[in-house]
Amino acid sequence: MALYSEKVMDHFRNPRNVGVIEDADGVGEVGNAKCGDIMKMYLKIDNDIITDVKFETFGCGSAIASSSMATELIKGRPVDEALQLTNKAVAEALDGLPDYKMHCSVLAEEAIKNALDDYHSKKDLKTEG
Amino acid sequence: MIYADNAATTKMSELALKRFVEVASNEFGNPSSLYSIGQSAKDVLENARADVASVINADPREIIFTSGGSEADNQAIISAAKLGEKNGKKHIISTAFEHHAVLHTLEKLKKEGFEITLLDVHSNGIVTADEVEAAIKDETCLVTIMFANNEIGTIQPIREIGAVCRKHNVLFHTDAVQAIGHLPIDVQEYNIDMLSSSGHKFHGPKGTGFLYAKKGIRLTNLIEGGAQEKGKRAGTENVPGIAAMAEALKAAVANIPQHNDSLRAKRDRLIEGLLQIPHSALNGDRDSRLPGNVNFCFEGIEGESLLLLLDDKGISASSGSACTSGSLDPSHVLLAIGRVHDVAHGSLRLSIEDDITNEDIEYIIRSVREVVEYLRGFSPIWRDLVAGKKQFIL
Image (tube, rainbow over all chains, first blue to last red; front, side):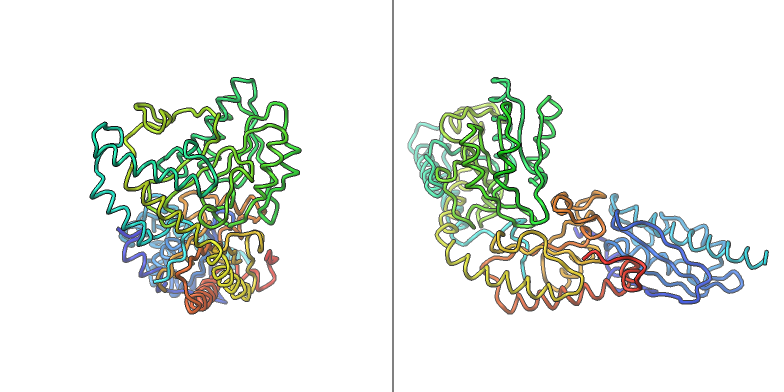
């Protein structure tokens, strides 16, 4: 029995949507180096649709795989829908994570929420301005 | 495949394996039985005991076979604590980077009212005999310090520490699990009162080990139920395992001089090669370290990802990253030598053996460099470091 599912290993070895969006509409960063995981998500949003998403992750195999899967799950989706994404959905899409690695999927969920919060606050600023 | 995790476990040698099968096939008798096949198994057991004893310059009666290093560590420390308690001495000195078999046993004793002093091991991963001496009090019943560290391979000044303990008449135990078979050990010359060892670290079988306890030290049983091992460790002896362990140990010790020369050169080349990776650092003293141990931190990456990608390249290694242990904290050893969490998560231990070739070493260097560069390529920490938003630590 391998440590991770084939899906996790696939997303770890070939992570999707890796990188940076320089003019992102929303950026979210969660975790800290002390605990060994940091995820950063960049969103490009047009008409409340997530048109592009990129991530950078410092962390273990499941942290990288969770980031990758989460970006796949929200890419091209409406913002409202992305806000509903749960860590469980990320873990399930990866065919499961070991119990002690579930926090990686939590981080992925939080990173997306964080980036969407950033997008909303920027949007509010624009409206107010 | 390149196996570079010999500090975790070693492959059984052909010699040990042959001995194991031979004894398991031909000497199935119970050494406690009176009839001849029992007594024949008993002879195998006692010959193994004599072999093991002679390797460390002990008397065969001073060797108790155990299930491994952890059991030996537990029994040595518990025994010393019980003896101390009887005399009203409840202080134990150790170091912050011992194996958990030692540290967890000490934590248990602390709850029972013992005072535990864990000495600093400094940035080089070495405690000094002067520091041990300064920590000794009238109430000290035991000094327990590992011979060589299991993660960073640093060798402790055991001879000097032994002399200090003898001078102050304090029992001295050393966890020699990583050292035995790699470094010459003489319990009399080094004034070692108790020593723990594990068979599978020197090409013997798993589930074997021994505790050396100097004559006159009354051991406390961890396992009750029979007269085996002079009544100090109940349970029918693992005769094939013990015989194979003794065979492996004899071979390892005979090979020490040659092993040291050739392996040290490969280790040093590996260290040189990995130091070329920017913002990397060797963990632990460069000279006073086991001939096959290399341990590095690479800034901006996490150890488990590194291990998994090295595994894809056919290299088996280990890391002190939290993610490989199932806890949130990285290796207590790396923290003990002053590595901060951020950096300790990005550690790699390569523990090599004689079978590794110079080509393997070059392949490891290339592979580690590639994987570190790749992981840094999408690490947000690395981006901040390069952008100057964070200060490099290494």
